Amino acid sequence: MITDLAPMPNHVKISVTRSFLPPKAEFDKRLADIWASYHLTNNGPQVQELEGRLKDMLGAEHFFFMGNGTIALQIAIRALDLIGEVITTPFSYVASTTSILWERCVPVYADIDPATCCIDPARIEERITPRTSAILATHVYGLACDVEAIQAIADKHGLKVIYDGAHAFGSTYKGRSLMTFGDITTGSFHATKIFHTVEGGCIVAKDPEVARRVLLMRQFGHSYDDHFLAGVNGKNSEFHAAMGLCVLDHFPEIMADRAEQWLHYAGALSHLPACRVLVPDSRLKYNHSYFPLLFVDYATMARAQAALLVEDILPRRYFYPSLDQLPYLQDPAPCPVSRHIAESVLCLPLYHGLAVEDRDRVIRIIREAL
Ligand SMILES: Cc1ncc(COP(=O)(O)O)c(C=O)c1O
Image (tube, rainbow, N blue to C red; front, side, top):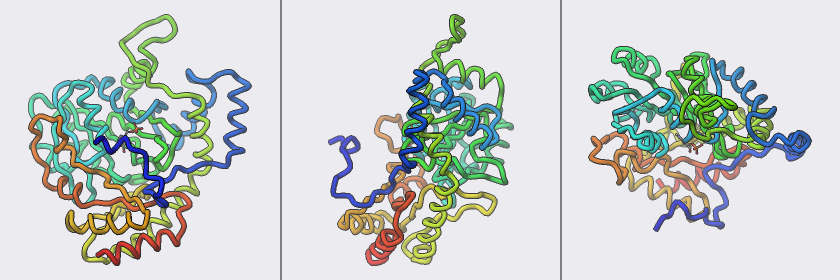
């Protein structure tokens, strides 16, 4: 049975996330502008405004609004001309691996650091071969990869670096947006994300020539009648940009609410012996985009998960399975740290407006289950 395609059971009362919706009047106002302009897509005023505001906010050299976070990853791999092997994390959403495969490269897994759930730089170097062209790492849950160590390895071996920043929007490391490291950072603005455009994503690029290729690849490889390369359709519409602009106006309050919720959970759950809370590095201003709870083992996680489900609360196993266990890969090296965490982690409900009583219920149920 393909369970992932099944809709969410309709008895679920509290899910792991719920999309932020701005006041409808604010979206209506932007819709009226779109209606008046007849400009629905192809780099219209809403897309340009969103790109400008996000570029400034992130301090990005080059910023592109994209159709989604997966096409952003695929174009990133193409724009950097990657071939052969790409060293990547086994602990991420499946799109970080499938985009490598889709671009006809080979994912090679380096295990993760249990303190951050991000790729462990100490494991990267041992995976490098003459066929390695890049490192593709995910800032898991909005926590930071060890960007300095990864860049040092890349410089030493002449490798490109792509960060999958699908969770990283709003996090800053040493005062700099986590979306601006590496040769390229990609983002996802899917409806479940802390900042969203319903469907959407982005590419942040450092080098102007890479940026030029991204721009062309996003629009079929041509500019009017001049054709430069074989591109694809990676752009997004005025409607999606309009939603993004409305959400962006509320981003400070979204961040503040998330932080308050995250601290509430952490205060109530971090001292329990059967589970562990991931504590952000002190140099990271954290976006609190997820609340993962790492249980000691699978059985304990399953007990907590079952107890929550009985009360119509749906946590999610972000991320399960560990990607080195994907059934369609050919003999990837096993990553034991990632496998253990993937088997024993649950992300608890955390979203704008989640009531304090609901969080208290989640906390009570987990405590009782343990
Ligand atoms: C880590 C990570 N990478 C990539 C993606 C793909 O993004 P999108 O759904 O916008 O294609 C997601 C989305 O869930 C994600 O969580």
